[in-house]
Length: 223
Ligand code: 5GP
Image 1 (cartoon, rainbow, N blue to C red):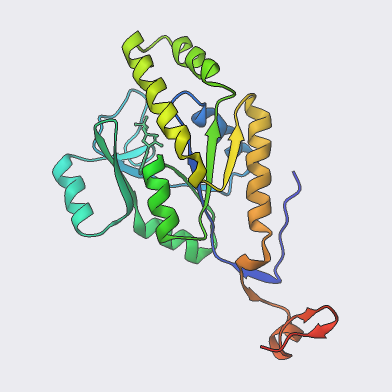
Image 2: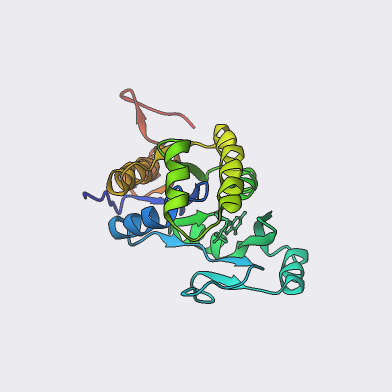
């Protein structure tokens, strides 16, 4: 993987939002992306749901009681929050703003309601929806987990249909047919967004700073 770096331009950190219906393979994709882009941080959300075996507090989520969650919410400490499958989830605002200021890119694994709120509050955020190859394949993957009963699988599929309808609000989609290929597509989106001229907040090239802006079609642009 060729990584573009330059000391000539300075930009803010980018928020990448990744949403997916349950069973689309977000966790494996995220792990693969982390291998390609270890510099991208993952935002740690707060939640009122119980910790699952293998999960660690402050690494996977900040596990909070409902009153503790509500207190943070009332103090305006969430960039977005939503009720998902009967529990509350929220993205802490301060670490997000810190990442943007420091020029570090951050990935948010949040649902469609949260994605919409983040896009409204941070219009430069990039939203990506992860799709399974088909609903049939999603059903097969949910059943293959072997952990959920028929009724839960049915409910997850119905939820997935509703979530996929929201894809229209997203900037990009990635189909997770094979995890390595999907990670490459995701990585291309990351690289393209990083290379956008409009994201550059400061050029560190002396002639540009001193003389009337960059050259456009051979002429100096007049600001
Ligand atoms: P799980 O409980 O299985 O880890 O996550 C359930 C759902 O909640 C997933 O769709 C996940 O993307 C979403 N989620 C996790 N953290 C947040 C958050 O901070 N805000 C919102 N809106 N959704 C979240």
